[in-house]
Amino acid sequence: MTLLEDSPRESYREACIPVLETTRLVLRAPHLGDAKAVAALANDRRIAENTARIPHPYRLADAEAFLLGSNREAGDTTFLVTLPDDTVIGACGFGSLDGNAPELGYWLGVPHWGRGYATEAARAVIDYAFTEAGREVLGAGARVTNPSSRRVIEKCGFQWTGVGLCRIRALGSSVPIDRFRLERSIWAALKSWGPVKRVA
Ligand SMILES: CC(C)(COP(=O)(O)OP(=O)(O)OC[C@H]1O[C@@H](n2cnc3c(N)ncnc32)[C@H](O)[C@@H]1OP(=O)(O)O)[C@@H](O)C(=O)NCCC(=O)NCCS
Image 1 (cartoon, protein in one colour):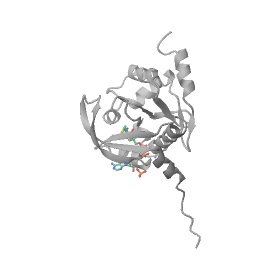
Image 2 (cartoon, helix red, strand yellow):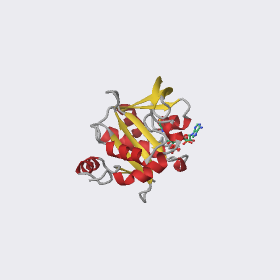
Image 3 (cartoon, protein in one colour):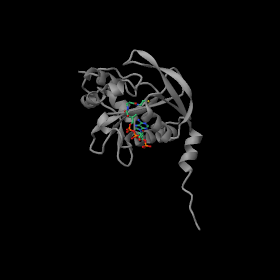
Image 4 (cartoon, helix red, strand yellow):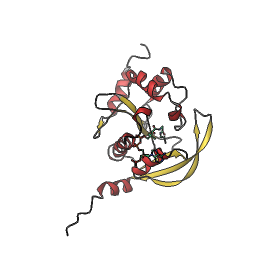
């Protein structure tokens, strides 16, 4: 079996990850056939320098390792973000590091920035985390130099909890980040808070 063939284990992992549809996007399990598309999108310093674990340069082998390792650990949930024609545009998911609260993470290929896609994908994953995956709280973090990610996090209802340090693999060093938290109860309140109906 070569690295590019789907193993039975991969089929099992894929089966555990549902397909989520939003207004403009489809989020689905990653598979090895996505490696070329993922490598082409993720090989950009602007992505690597704003995420903890993405190396730079990002080669096909890195994409294969990412895809093979996705959804392998209990609690690690990774979706690929695609357009309805199955064009891959990025990734979004959540997972626990060092036993801490599961952390939301996402990146999109640069040609797809600025259209609200990250917010749309993140909201779908958050809904999944609190409804189907039974999470009680999610964390998120953004480099202090990354206002668009901070904005995505805030638009999803997260509350700022403080600053910290995060090691960025592509930089080989740690950088300051803002940390955020979203509790299930806050999420539920935000989801149920419909518009006020003006009657007079
Ligand atoms: C962060 C990232 C996912 C955002 O994707 P996106 O699809 O462009 O995000 P959205 O369009 O949903 O939302 C971006 C928001 O940031 C705002 N924004 C963009 N640049 C900004 C800036 N320089 N200052 C302030 N706000 C900014 C946008 O106006 C938008 O907010 P709005 O809807 O209120 O107008 C994308 O830039 C990316 O992949 N970056 C590299 C990886 C990364 O940073 N991942 C997150 C790790 S924490």
